[in-house]
Image (cartoon, rainbow, N blue to C red; front, side, top):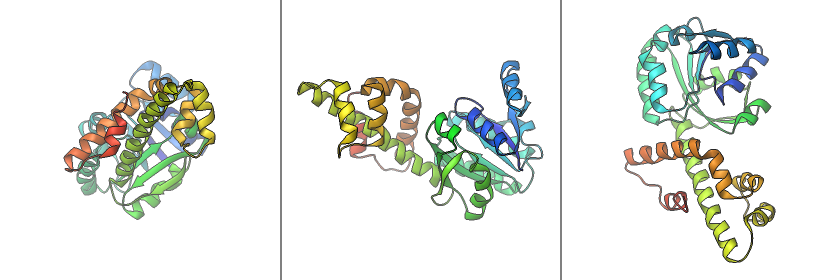
Length: 264
């Protein structure tokens, strides 16, 4: 059993908390309102109202908030790292800039705290089933220390290199995901020009050689627009992170950017 602190028990985070509890871990979760703390306590986790309380006497703290700014706020501005014991680990699930990971490492390393970026691919249903994909960056020993905890909801857990590489792989993944949506929008438009309705097109194409995972999601909703509406908030945020990170590095997305921008 590990003692785990958790920040960000929302759409993705709450299923993670439940899986951690189900695996026998003790979990302390940040809840900012009476309502959220009551929901946390109902799962069997212990709710706290202050960020620094999350880090007291833990083996690991997991952060699953929405934006880069939120990660910086909870980790750097509210005493979380200073409250965590030496030898503990900080795991970041949020899709953020790899530079933020570098900044966290710079603060955490002198405190004896390991920082692991564990970017996620999948949704709440994958977490509930225990098969969320995790792209993990960090030193091999630091990653090995947290894998037994991540296995509560992650399978596969893929170590993809040094700190920040989990996020770099996730950024490439999400650029490709967004580009595939753009290409499917173009395919849908072509089908309509040829007289094929979107629902008919996407009921057939998943069985062909041009299929991809995104196409299956589009097929379930009947059109690209219906699927894009369901993931728009998340994919727009992640594409913005991709573009900003690539610009910082002086690189470009090439044809992926053209596809991402198609019929948006």
